[in-house]
Image (cartoon, rainbow, N blue to C red; front, side, top):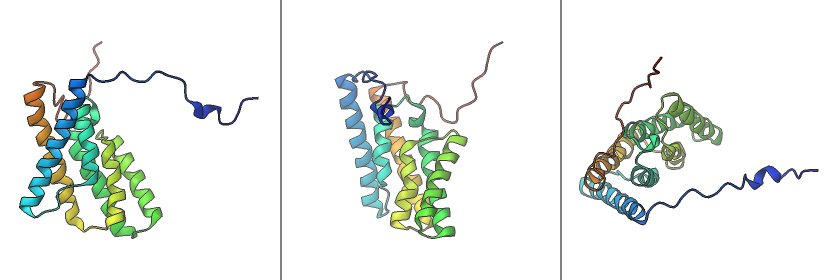
Length: 178
């Protein structure tokens, strides 16, 4: 008889290949530059522009820039939509665990339905329910922080990996040839 825990053992698949050392260093450097840039903007503007999920966004923007969830559309729209949904649920339902759960579920649904999936943005409703900000959270840190990260990624990749980022801005549906 099979153990009920056998399905938790995985499929014994091999680890993904290790990225080349140069790629790893470039990813770390890009992430440091992006957070430094947004942090400096926050310091000089006096506005809260750093968002915890932006750190996770940097992993994708600089480590996996070709991935769909790393494209500017996904980063910016994913963050804005998830924050908007978190704020709506907080303001309409109050700071309850059930409201947070529904907000996160709704954010996931909306990101997938709009094809703007950006996994780090999934933490925005949680951040919103923990900090209970006002509506201006949608502009700062969400929109300005996401745009700042994307701007640094655009400039950074232009220098270190020309022509590789972004793959698309708005995108289009794939066409099928007959």
